[in-house]
Image (cartoon, rainbow, N blue to C red; front, side, top):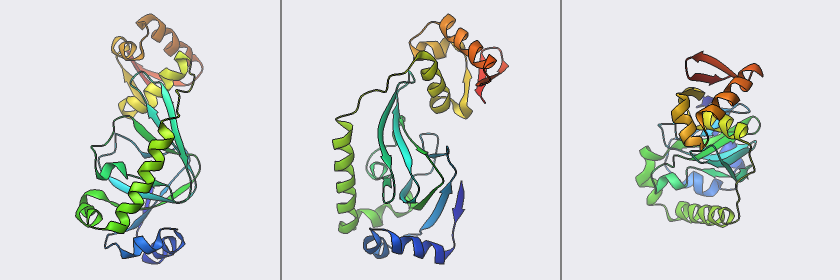
Length: 206
């Protein structure tokens, strides 16, 4: 992840946005963030609340349950909003956004500018439209079929701090499988080079 504060580059990106009229009316501190393919653009592990608008590239937004079951909510391309729900609600512990390719976002802090955002009718109209579209899309989603191995990999990537599983018994409880099943999958994944054993009951994604 790279943050860019070059005023000319920021102004250029805002001018190209379909929301340029509204953005230019907001008195907020804009900057750009560039993400590499596979980087998490938004996750529960991030402490800073950011509002981000995709300027270039694409991302996948998914809902990961505690058992590793993955629901694909949508794909976002240019002009997609991230952080719109965070303006009003506590940050979800299950929603993740991941860059599908190199990605550039127009960004600013929600906490720093919350009062400004909530006082702008034009900005709030955009947010209402965005949230309505997302709610409509969520009514039609189903969980993507996944094997236990796939759920273990998702659990480690999205639910474990630093992508490190600590404690086979506890993880098996969340994954709704036996400790023996989970240990067998971890052993197979280690042999396949997908995970690395750090110690007793501790494994990290490679």
